Structures are given as structure tokens and as C-alpha cells.
Amino acid sequence: MAGRAAGSASESHPEKRYYRIGEVSRITDVKPYVLRYWESEFRWMAPQKSRSKQRLYRRRDIDMILLIKKLLYDQRFTIAGARNRLRELGAGQALEAGPLSFEADHRARYRRIRDELQAIRAML
Image 1: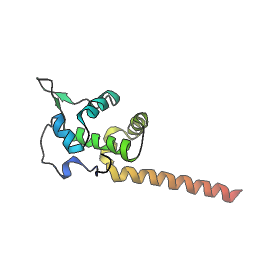
Image 2 (image 1 turned 90 degrees about the horizontal axis):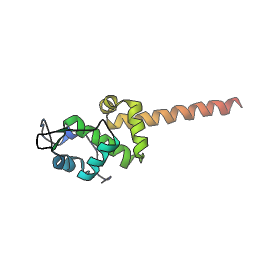
Image 3 (image 1 turned 135 degrees about the vertical axis):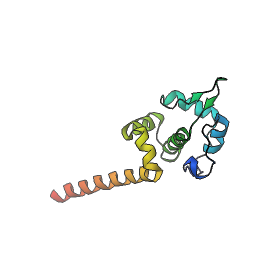
Image 4 (image 1 turned 90 degrees about the vertical axis):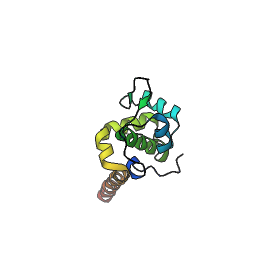
């Protein structure tokens, strides 16, 4: 699962208004039972439901699923850690930033911390 690139859903799939859980599972390479579990862990990730109680995901939901997948599988966050990280960024801001910006944010933060530590060491 983690080996696949987690790009935006709009990169390789036709534009639709709603997607069923099976389609989302194929697009994101995340099993349906995992998607249902994530709904319980990430409360704001609750897709609309049709009259027949089928989950209906929007493009934004799919992009968020890909971001959660990246946090959990690629960056090795725990569920709680991913939840906190998304809260820090704000769900909308996290999607707008995109996965590459998200990684660059970490690199920039570590670089800043390293520079500050080197400055402290130089003062000693």
C-alpha cells in the first residue's frame, strides 16, 4: 500500500461529483474497512450518505484520504499524531499546501531548529 504514490485524485481520475466507497478504495489504494475505520478516528471525515445509506465521497474527501494515508503510511505518524498534525495545519490548509509542501514544512522546521542549536553551541 505505502509503495504507491499518493498524488491528488484529480491527477489520474475523471471529474465526478460523488464517488462510492469502492471507487475511493481503488483510487486511494486503501481498503474500504480502513476507510470506515478512519471515519471513526477522524470525525470530520464523514462522507455524505445516499438514501440507500451508501457513502458518497467528494473530490476533497479523496484528497484528504490521500493526505491521511501519506501521514500514516509514508511519514509513519500514529493515528493520534496524524489527527494532531491535521489539526495544527487545519484540514483545508493541509489540502491546499499539498503533499510536497507538507514535507518541505518539516524540512524547514528541522533546518531552523538545527541552525538555532548550532548558534547556541557557538555561544558556549
